[in-house]
Image (cartoon, rainbow over all chains, first blue to last red; front, top):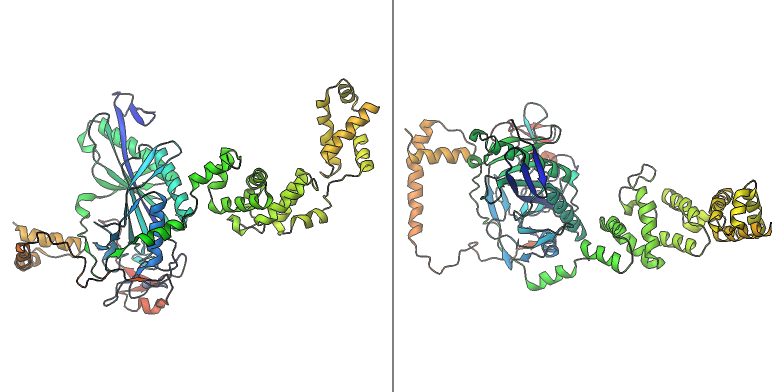
Length: 496
Length: 99
Ligand SMILES: [Zn+2]
């Protein structure tokens, strides 16, 4: 009979034995660097190109070809390292990781073994916990093997040689939530510093998990690697499943069921992990120094140049938006989550001089247009509305030319057609109506039959006016100046 | 019973995804042993205070700019493929086993 396992914070408690289980977990993340060309040759990095159209003698490992390191890949890798406060080594070298598989044309992958370009660093999570980085190294990607078409395996080498950084955390991750938060923060940082687009759907970010469990107070037990995790949610779900599987296995008391050191694949449909291969037999990479690539120096001046190119990082931006620009923590989160959105916001806030309004318009209206079939835009940069366009709208509302409600109509039209705010206002005739006699007509109509409200207002209950302003605004098509409407209604009632 | 030399040959072949018969392993084992014995003489050299080398030429920092160069055409790339299916290399099925 299997026990019920309950969470007590980061401890997993067995209802049957009362054992308090601790989790030890580390994450390995591969991120594709945002270069135009591959790590060691001039082939363009590729996504969705025809198979085997982006290869050359170097990345297919032809005899006599020589790899040469892409300087931009090194620069981006260093920038990512600096952003997480890691130590960049004054020099590093490359090694051959030898294994034989159809997606690796040279029969080795060029990676870094004992001299990675970077060690240490860490990321602070919103929960206050810190996940330390063990190391980051540079390496080339393998090609793609396709097993589900016909009786043979098909190989596309476009991806072979694509520049990656592999980051390995210390075993500081103690829950599925930690894993999710860490990945979210890491992805945000990689995008902010421009090191990677980190799009999981394009394979630009991939994550493997190492996890083991042990009773409180005891030593670490056998760790299991879980692969095939294609979203952050899957990482968290797979980790949760694997923690429970391991605890149940130990609690069964049946040693034949105990976890063994192996690689397991996450099956996102069935929500289980299953064994792929046992590790001790397979892994023996016989690393040795890559003789075709000389060591690479990271000079203090190179390091400083890269440091100078670092933008303000997400955590710092969040704090500044709240403290200096007066945004709510929620709005700051929404804006900062996407660097392009944050940049858009800052430009609109600067031009209009009204950060709160800019934040409101962006989170309530502009972001809703993303992923919308009408606009066909997937990122904020795809939209026809630019920061100065939004600033113009903010000014029209601030000056009282249009009412906020009319502003919503205007921004939607701007987002669909790209027309400037003033032009939309004019074309749709949305300019706020200031004309007294016109406003009075609308107000008289709204007052008809509202004797109860009239009596309340006469009794000094001014709040009751609110119920009349809505109908007037509606009658005016959102064009009436609500401030004036309020004054006129009050005057008409008191005069009556 | 297989000797430890034969076991080494078998293991090396396994890592290289080569299938060899016990007869071949027995044949190769003494050759492996001689090669390894030969390299063992390197271990006799006194390396006290010598920095591990990273290359024979003393080169450092050979870098290139991130500028695209023409790739091979698909036909060029696939010209020596053992078998071609559409625009892919086609190789024996390599999944399910000890991949
Ligand atoms: Zn190439």
